[in-house]
Image (cartoon, rainbow, N blue to C red; front, side, top):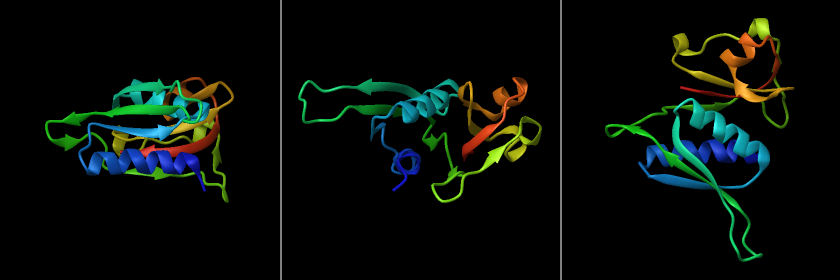
Length: 131
């Protein structure tokens, strides 16, 4: 099972079902990806919800963003998978959908968008594409 792919599919399905927010199990890497989505205005707000009960595990609450009644995201595609990791150099990072899409990359300096990584001359693992 791929927890990152599960998070991305949960966000996509939440948009398609027009839910106001979705919850995903907490991990630090997922929180970094969600913060990048928040910074790029793909989602409205990202918060870590911890419970007082020790049996319940912490979750990430992601509030979805809509333009009118239309979802902000039409497609989320996981690029680097468990069985096939995809890495790129900074010079090979291309624009997605004519600049309307976002590529999320895990670099040595943290998770960031493809345009930020290209500006900082950093390569890394391509996590997903969003448009």
